[in-house]
Length: 617
Image (cartoon, rainbow, N blue to C red; front, side, top):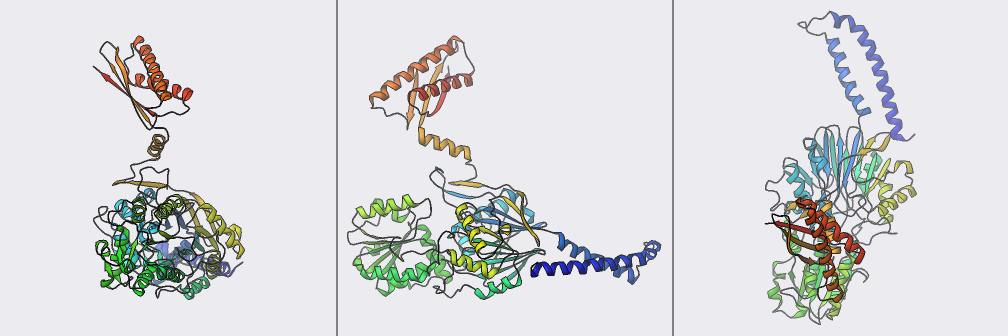
């Protein structure tokens, strides 16, 4: 039995003794209670008994109530992180992030978590807490408030909240009340929650782990973290506070699993600065440097390097420009105004006096670097003397697009420095030794890996077992799992509605899975439309008009034969329908579709999407 269980057992024993004593009091006062009329004031003794009853009821609630942890995003995936902590009739939400579409998400711009469970419990939601300002943690914030309303306050670091608020334009008009916090700030939320923000290091300022206390449990959510002993700014990894929290007792740890498969420790962000410095020092022409816009620490180092070598800075890319604007205003980026120039001004300066900072490390089709690589950027054309530095590693799923850009840049004779060059990029997430350090600092009774694909979560479980967390006390959950935490148990007790919501232009949630399947079918097999005309005598007039896209190549001889055979098959079906005097339009359509599907299966092995139009005259 551990220290916490002993304490709990002792308190329960004391409560049992008090209950016994009060039972005796009840028996003594039974006569008094029976004889008192409603208009007679209670004796002091009776009042005292009732006060004790109230105290015991409250304590008894503490010994039986449960805290629920409900992940709605971020498990078995990268991105759209969101977790609900619930106690009785109150909830707090940690983060509301997005993820980016993959190849199968045709036409989709963004993917966010489903808010169905929260919207059905909106009166219980007391706050949104933000761990830090990366897209996978704040990208869904405006949609969260669009769905749930602006009455829910938001808590987080100043930079995190400002970046989140900058996304509200055209989505939400009324902004929530923002509560800016700093390291070791403790906040009471609702009746049951006490939360504390603890500084950790990552790849952006204002990153926090969050301790959540309910009447029955203590939970620590690490947020995204690495242990950077030489950070770029004054924000340190708060070992002292985390260690104290561990000593005070933590029932459940939720911890970042991103780099659980990578041995060792993640290098400091300062390593990147030294590597970029070395490359810029050797550059004789322009330097075009692509980075994640949100890597504020890295951008600050890049600014100092440009200043060191007398280079002016031109900034390009919508997200990069927004980050510069917000971070400069808040003091997170320090750059002399005289250093910043436009792309047009850069054209009139010597090449060795120019640095262009832009977006595009992930090969996004419309990013600045992609347009430079493809030769479609209206202001920047590659020159033989240019050095392109890509300070970012492709996120899983983006490798193909990122390397396509690199190939295009190399074909244009540019010098390209990318992630395979040691030190040009480092992760913002801790590797195995840092994850084990966090487990040792916190010493949780129960552990749940979060923030990662299943393979990452499973490896993190193995690391926790290595440092002494019992396997039975580690839970691998899924999005939508309802997890029940008490002082003596942690288990999965059910499911709540969860899933993905697709953002398509200004449309939120109107694209469903079946629409994506239809789009995929169109992409894979093409589309064929057929128009037929039927008169009032139920006779079909003329040949069917057949049109296809993405299916048959018109100039090919074999295609011509297939087209003729296809017309014959359709005309044969129309003759049968005419003979039967078929007048039900849906039956006519289905008859033609089924006939063509059989024909394509037998002759081509692929079936396009067939759309039939019947015109009545």
